[in-house]
View: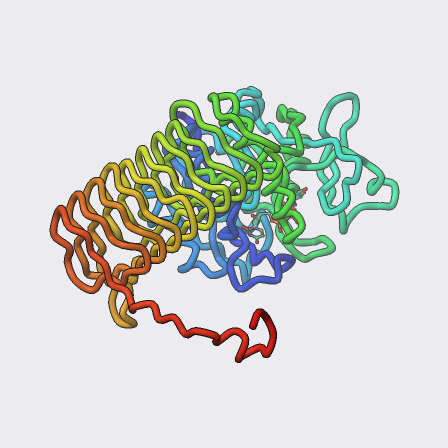
Length: 432
Ligand code: UD1
Ligand code: MG
């Protein structure tokens, strides 16, 4: 781990047109910057994040999830630009890997290719059909000469397709020498980090281009880039889980949060969305269901069901249009059209269509406890807090307003009234 990492994340990200700092925009359930930090943490014990725009907000978000990261506040008023971002940072190790906070697709493996390049300065280069927006890399006889930012390019240089992906691995000594010597004599009046490449070349240092894939080094600057990066990340997440034995029907229609986890053999049908840190084991999630931060083990859900945060389902079958929130279900069948919130339901219990746990009185939430082998008839309302003990029957259409002891039938129904001849009288038609 003899490598320091610095992640540049001070920019405002104007092109996002957002009150949220660019690097906190999420890809597959996690801020972009966190994806970069995850890749960095695997290869370094000395990570510095450079911040300026909304310093406190970004620092708090990062510090809550990453305990050992250092923060550096860029003096962006006096030293704007990616070169300015590196002023005054102390690095622990002899080599420094420089990353951008807006590169959520970067992987540890590709970063290692840069740090393994055995150069004074290794830099990432992508060959792009459309190079617009990027700095162009001038290469002669396989040797990097310099990087020219698009705004400073001659028309001829603009046609170059080799671009700077923005990741570098540099000897610390070179940074200590070159960063204070940067000038801002360019089209944007900024201190360009990219100028250190020419400085190193002029000094006869070994500068090595490392060709990388856009799919990993894509920088996110706009919401269009964000959506594209999300697609690439989703493809990666789905492929990884399919390789682990998860069956997916029409995978391109499935969304899986990067924190979700699958165990055993799972089957995911088309249009399913899995948000947050879900744990899904030996389960079949049917078409168009939405699962949010829930645990599902040995059972099936859907089609078109919604399992919300804090739910834990095992050996259960949840059917269409059933919503479950913060509930523990073990060996339960709830086939159709129900809301089960803040409930605990035991083995062998059947929840009839249209059952509602009335868990909220407008002020607070209350629990519904249902025991084993209970038969809850259709269209039952359970007014929480309420307990239904083992082996009871709740008749269809009941409103359960108090606890039900074991072994009984609970029934609450308005008596049915029959009014003779009403149809004909009302519509003035039909049999006499
Ligand atoms: C930069 C490179 C360009 C490269 C591109 C790759 C420079 C001068 N140009 O351009 O050659 O092709 O990345 O994506 O480096 N940042 C700071 N402080 C600042 C300015 C930026 O920390 O004062 C951070 C940003 O938050 C961002 C990263 O540096 O994470 C890159 O900044 P950005 O403005 O996106 O640079 P580009 O114009 O894309
Ligand atoms: Mg950028």
